[in-house]
Image (tube, rainbow, N blue to C red; front, top):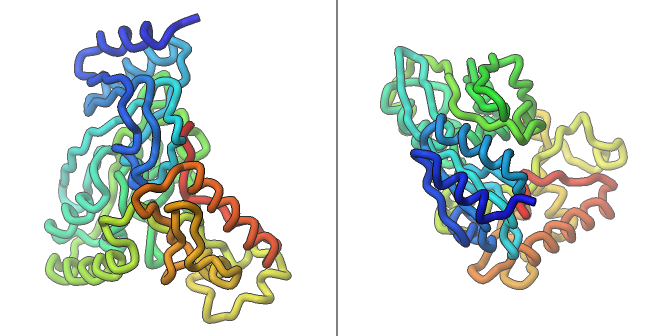
Length: 320
C-alpha cells in the first residue's frame, strides 16, 4: 500500500508545487474551523496542478481539492490524505470580455469589471469566495447569477484540460455540472459583459456591498447563508400554503423565512451561533468546532422538517 510519505515525496518533486505537512485547514476556511491535512499542496500553475493530480491518483492516497474555503466545513480531525489548492488569480480583459482564473477572489473580479466600465457582475459584490467556487456553485444575488455571463469554462477532468460552453455547464439555481462532478476542477472562465458607466456601477455595487457587510461582516467567521433558498413552485403543497406572498421573491422563498418560523434565530451550540437578526446566518463565535457546527445544522434542518415537511439543503460542502 502507498504511504503518505511516498505521496509527499512524489508531490515535492513537481516543479511549481508548494508542499507542506500537518497544515491546519482552519487557515483556509472562512469558518476558521478544521484540523490538519496530512499533506497540503498548492500552485498557480495549471501544469503543476495536473501533475499533482496525476501523482495523487497514482499514490492511492485520498485527495480533495479546495478553493477559497468560503463554503467549506472541515472536520476537527482534519483530512487524512492530500489537500490540493489551485490559486491562479489572473484577470484579463479584451473589449467587453473578461478571462478570470479560478483562484481570483470574486470581489476582485467584480472590481476589475467595474473599473473598466463593464456591466453584469455588480450584483455579485460582497459575495465571498473565489471565481472557481462561484462557477462551481453558480453564485448569485439580487436575482442574478454568474452563469448569466459565462461563455466558456476551462477545466481539468482528471485526465485532460477541457472546455465547456455555457450550455454544457448545465447551470441551474446554485448548481452546475461541476458540482455534480466533484473530480472536475475549474481552471478559468470567460465572461461576456456589456459596456456601462463605471461611476454608476461603482455606486450600485457599493450600496450592495454596504448592505451585505452589515448582514455578513467581513470579520465574521461564517459562510454567508448556510442553506439554499427554495423554489416556490417546488415546495410541497402543505408548505406552499403557509408562505405569504410577500415572502416570495423572484420565484424563491428565502430559507431564512422557514428557519425564522421554526424559531432558529439566536440558537447556538457551543460557540456556534445562529444570528439573532438573520435565521440563515450561522457563525463561529471564535472557539467553535466542526462537530458543533454540524450538530447545529442538523438541528436546524430537523426543526424545519418538523414544522413544514421539507428538507433544507446546505450551500456548504463538507471535507473530512
